[in-house]
Image 1 (tube, each protein chain N blue to C red):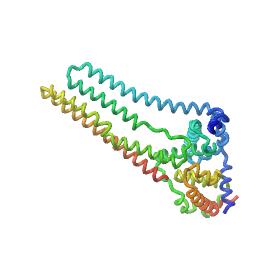
Image 2: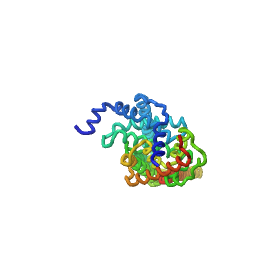
Image 3: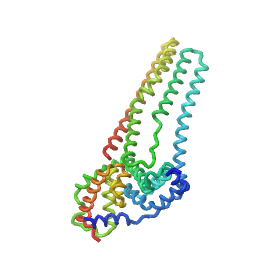
Image 4: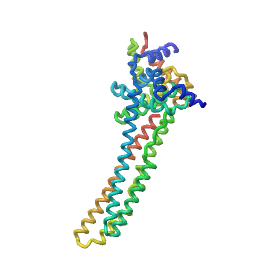
Length: 182
Length: 190
């Protein structure tokens, strides 16, 4: 019995495997949708798009990567398509991690007193990023390690490591100076 | 530096979520709605071509003029060629599931470049095949044109077709420019 057959047999049907992925990573998908779309209505649509993309992708799931990696890839790709589509209509300018790193701390002098404020600031930063950089920072925030991020994004391990270093530096600067204090 | 970074990760992971449930039934319905839409769009396109071929075939069978019959035959051949080209080169390619983001972006760009090449070359695969039929048809009409009124009608017809060709060409050039911008934006997004 091949690995693929084993996975299929274990998972049962397309619906079962989808339900398993949706149940386990549903909250992560919601957080991703939030990072890709600020508007609540469009975000609901995007989340549904992510779920539909995931359900449709299940028959091609070959077990060569974990269900988590697969789910994140599919959801991120739906998010990236959404960003590129929206960018055409909104004309939004996206920036890279390097530029974000050099941005002045918008909140200097002001203390981000609560988690809500810190989260809003974080989302604001993420939503300005180019798709690939956004993908890396989201995966980092979700707690994925460099190897997993490399597997999901297709970037080399070295490239991911550089990006993570930049992310850490930027976050440290933004949330230490800006005052992510609780 | 680790502690604040850990707390940023924690803030991200602990953010309240609505816990939206997507029943498989709802997902399946939405997915099949999309498949149906694509299927019907294809059926509509092929049906329109079929109706045109049937009409041209009818004209070819009922006309007594040899040149007109030849021209209708050439139009049918041109239409068949166009449909085959559209099917081979123009059918949208479906993105494979579960590919990494870099690959997805590259495939998306390749798809945009393919579409750009198609609309840019509209003169060779769409307009040019129609020319022989048009020339033969116009020649047939010119041979039978005996009064100034028929000549004027013919000149108007040729002018109208030339304007329509130019319009289609310009429209496709504009589409190519739009695709070019999308490719540039995509390059800037990486």
